[in-house]
Image 1: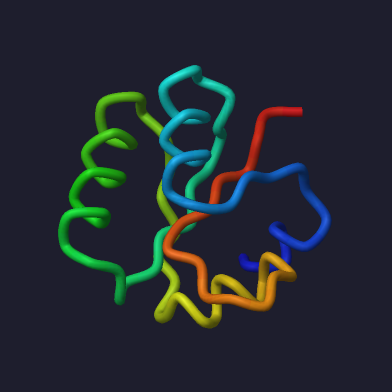
Image 2: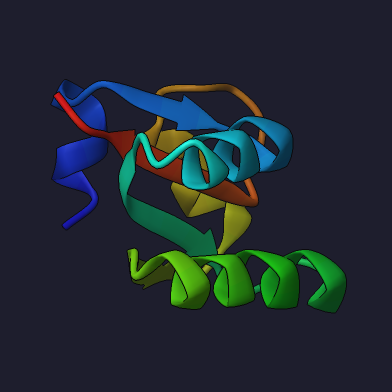
Length: 81
């Protein structure tokens, strides 16, 4: 689950994640449930369009910790190897 984020190649943050989805380098997206509705809807719709799996995380704080950063993270993506 979130363990994947520790050891895999990833991007963290809205802009980088959207870029990775659009250039088809993302294989899985982690999306915090407590993000703003605009971000949530935007990322969820892009993942649906590009057929990318989404794993929902309860809080931005949990996602930031899993990504090994000191701030909350709204979204992150695992990249294709």
